[in-house]
Image (tube, rainbow, N blue to C red; front, side):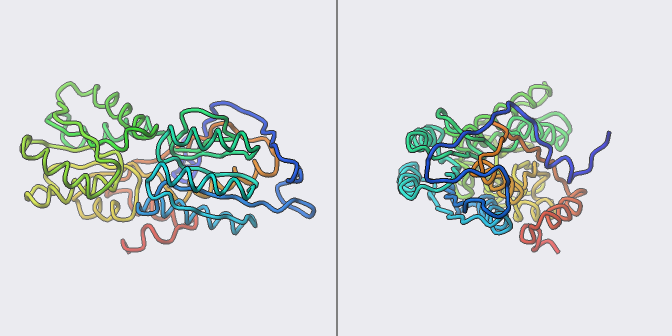
Length: 334
């Protein structure tokens, strides 16, 4: 059966099912998601950063869904600091929210936060980046391995299946960076005439990627393509290529589907992006967290599927986003 984009993007793959039993006698139990007599739901969301458009959109989706469901949501910015995320989470736990939502800066710090919440009897919902240990009520994220594979296939298509390419990795202490790299390398292995001549991390940051790519180009001026594990890094790569007059000639594939990347795809300076709507992710995270707070059964793992977007499919993707309530991402493309 053929599925349209709106259907595919919310496809949920169940890794395991579990019934969540919440600790804490100060929170009343309710079997209904809504309705009279249900205990008020409060949630603290400790997000890795709000300096990246992807996570700004996640927060916007989360806030929109919280307003829809009547949840009191407190969004805290860890500014890409493990210590700040630990401090913010510790403070949040003293306020006994119904649920703690985390997007760990690093998988190990996420594990520490989860352990502290487990001890306090506060359920934890994590998204995008998985803690390395601890008991979660649920985890929600996009399929990072498939994202990397999609990126590899798209890059191979862009350069005609042969040539020299570069891989720009994300923060290697996170599960999402590791999985996107794994998927990319699995995907690119299917093209024996493509050689990966350089691999380097740029920490999911645009400015860092600009510097990294500038240095790589000095030793590899004859590359045909670049895969960057997120769009912020892809845009940094584009800036480095523009400085050498190579933008559009060297094909760039990113991941996330943020507004600036979609504009670059439309302009031809990026070839494609594996679009993973952060706004939809934020909505899903809050919806599942609400069920956790209401002591309803939820899936242990919810895996959302992204979609590769090229110039030909931008209009369709933007229509989907607007239908989901995201009126910001494609605003500048109109």
